[in-house]
Structure formats: C-alpha cells, structure tokens
Image (spheres, each protein chain N blue to C red):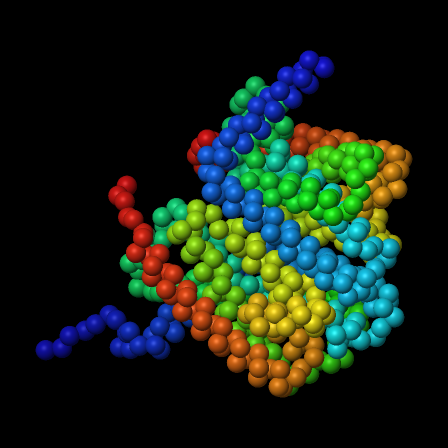
Length: 265
Length: 280
C-alpha cells in the first residue's frame, strides 16, 4: 500500500514537472496570465482596503484579518490548481466524453485526470498569497507553520470541491454552468468575513459549500493557534477527498464516451 | 424589356442594415430561448450575490449605527446591487468569442461575409441579453425584497431614462470587451486583460460598492474614468433618480462610447490586415 502510494506520488510529481515545462514553452502567455491573476487579486483586495478605510471594523474583522484571509485563500487556491489544474474543467470534460484517454491508461483515473494540467493563472495566486501574508506581520514560526499547513488543507478542499461538482456532469449530462456557479459560490463566500453569515446559511457554508473551511476557519487557526481547529480543518479536507472519491466512482459507472475525436498533447 | 432583381430595393441603406442586424438579434434571441434553462441557472446565482451583499451592508449599517451612507439607505443600497448585477450578468460576452475566432483563424472566413464583423457580434450578443436580464431581475428582486423590503424610491416614469442609460452601458461595455478580444491579434491569450477589466469594474465601476461609498480621492478618479458608466450610472439612477445626474451620465456615456468605438474600429482594421489565410 505504502509502496503503491509512493509510486503514484512520484507519477504525480512527474506530471507536475511536465506541466510546468509545458507552460514555460509559452513564457509570454504564462507570465501574462500569472501577472494578470496577481493584479486581479490585488484589485479585489483594494475593495477591502477601501471598505475598511471607511468602516474600520465589521463583525470582528479588521483589515489585518482580511490580509490573512486573502493570504490563505490565494495560496490555497494557487496550490490547488497548480497541481490539480483539471479539477475546474472536469464538468466540461465529462460532458464532452473526454475521459476515454485516461480510462485506457494503467494509472488510477482520478489523480491522473486531475493532475494532468497546470493552470498558468495559479502562479499569480501563489505569489499573491505569500505577499499578502507578509502584510499580516505574523512572522513567528508557529504562525508561519500554521499558515502553510492551512494553505495545503485549503488546497485539498478546493480541488476536491471543484472536482466533486464537476462530477455532476455524470448525472445531469452537462453541469458546466452549475459547476461554475457552485465554484463561484465557494470563492465568494470564502472571501467574506464568516461572521456575516448566521443561521441556516452558516450550516451550508460548513457542509454543502465548504467556504467556512476555505476562509474563516483557517484564519481563526492562525490567529488563535488552535490545534483543535486545525484538526477540524484536516478532518474537513479528508472528508472532501472521500466524498470526491465516492461521487467519482459512482459517476464513472454512468459515463458515456462521445463520438468526437480529441487529441491529448 | 424588364429586369428583375432578388436584392431588396433599399439594399445598402441604413434601413436595410438595421433590418439585417435586427434579424441577427432576433435569431439569437430565439436561440437563447432554446437554452433558457442556462439563463435560468445564471439567474439563480444572482440570489447568492445579492444575499451576500445584503448581509455585508446590513452589518455595515448596523456597525455604523447609520440609516444613510453615501446618500443611500440600506434598502436603496441592496436594490442598487440588483441593478448592478443585472448589467454585470447580462452583458454581451463577446471578448472570449472574438479571441477564439482570432486564435483558430475562423475570423478569416467571416471577413468576406456581407456584414460588419463587430456589428454582427453586437447584434448577435444583444439577442441573449434580454432573457438573462429578465431572470437576474426576477431572482435578484425577490432576494432584495425579502432582505431589505420594497424600493420606496422606485419611480416608473423615469424608467425609460434608466433603461436608456442601461442600454448605453451595454454598448460601452461591448466596445471595451470587443477591444480586449481583438488584442488576441497581438497576444495569444487575452483572459488576463479580461480579468483586470472585470476587477476594475468591481471597485471603480461600482459592482462591489457604490462609487458614493468610496473615499473622496478615489471617488474623484472613479468618476473621471469610464468604468463607472457601465455599472454605477444605471444602478444609481435606478435607486436614486436625479435629472441633473442623468444628463451628466448620458453626456459622458456618449463621449466614451465614441472614443472606444473609434479605437475599436482602428484596432479591427489594423488586426484584419494581419490575418493570414492559409489553405487546407
């Protein structure tokens, strides 16, 4: 089991290296995309700067918490799609019958499928996440360690969530729009202070759309150094991977290939 | 001896052109009706955005212990976002289409067709706007009503003017987005430009917060730039009508549309010369 895991991890590592090399072949495009995403995040971030410049505090959040929130979400996001760049495209790939290529190869389908592509935008997210963290002023080893651990767990949750909603295409035919909307919901809710949402919607954010585990909870982990909360975050990450595996397995049984000819380069 | 012609007698006139592009719009409206479920899905997601904005601004008004911020009440602010989302989510999505046509070379095939490439895309894109706007308005209004109550400042008699500003906002946005799509002549990929434009709209355009809420210095800059004329102008007039502001916004929209339309035409002309047609 352990040997198998090591082999598969090595395979994923090779895929990532190949993806990076492939992206670097188109350096200008790669850099434009990465810088574009950095500026994109920066402009969104400006909203909060302007907001707190005028309103100072909202439900326990000040600009310092927003720095941390953006740092964790951006780094987590960046890590997720640097490695699993196909997760956001899964709905379309299933709808177009493009899984045949992966089904014929002697590798586990899901990891092979997810890790075959690197999104060039993600470099902008990674850089932004690190720079945003520098503004938090938390330079002690424990905070940095917790920040990095949270970012990795957030990445797992993001990639799993994207892939899971992509699996909806197995069941409804073409779930591209729905998957896009649900992904948007995850991003939107995770980038707002968790305290804004009360009642039933809070329950949704801790379960169906796990935005609380992508934004609010990691911020609290780094702020309070709570290992219990970190454990809860790790649990959420594990559950999201489990849910993805179950949904993908069930969905794959319903998969129908398309008649279009696709070339995988 | 008599000769018969199949061409319409007014061929080449502006009236014939109007009929031609009108037919394109109608065809695409029918097409979007066939995919109404997709527009419905998009409308559903506006519920999410309006809900989030309503929570954020309710908390902000509470924290400030204020009934009016930047000249708007909480109800007006919530309804402001309904109209802003209506424009944002119903806009003509032309940039990506043009980029793809430039990238895969299909642009070469349409150059010889009897229509203006850019006007074709405008007419074609306009067909889908109406249905998307209808769904967004329905769902958005429902959430705003539940969260903030009815818009007490709504005035039916000024709606034609608000709709005019909204229509011009679509035109202005089209000019900018089509320009970004045409940048594919020079850059392989234009999505970064698209993202930046969309995020500028978020802040300086008034999608995330009305321009009146911005600090004074930023507000001055935002009012000079064209981006506030796409989202802020129609949304502000919808919730807080002001005749003087309407005239100013209308004048500015006409000026900026002229500027961007000229730039777009130049960019297209320059780009079309660079198209290389290969056999195959």
